[in-house]
Image (tube, rainbow, N blue to C red; front, side, top):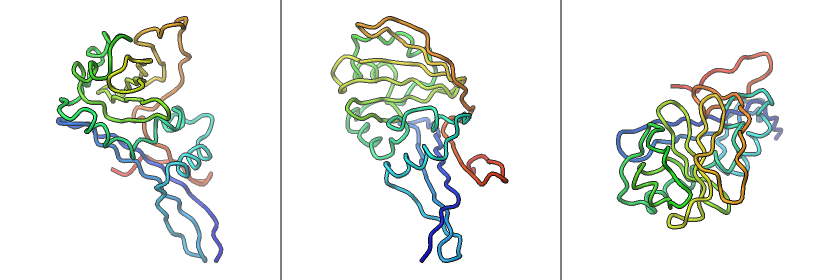
Length: 202
């Protein structure tokens, strides 16, 4: 049996909901020729689909899947933990104005009380809580756990610029370089060079 990888597609779509967390649909398909037949294979192992993502992402890509580190995009297996961490939390706020007053002295429990439940939980070593806002920007908050003080909190706008909501202790505040980002942030697809990329199916 001969296998020749041909096309890899990763599509991550975020659907904001009136109640609870946003719906996150993260799907990676590896299309390849198997004994002369073009067949799809769904990739579910995070290590594998992050490796494939790194291979298909080009330096000029505008997708969040290419711009953000993998531990912030591979969240599907962890998001359900948010419901156990914050069982009675209200839905997330979608306007950045609600996040402007976040301070390092706060805990994630404080943030959730003020801003609602996060949409995604990522991270390796520390927890990274991600909110998706109505203007396609993100609020990304790092903390060791739900009860301890925050480690950092950043607002990343759709144009790619990241701004700290507070300056972590022991650091010197400096502006982050802006990087391009798409209007629909979580989407990446790599097709053969002769064919253009298209949006995720809707």
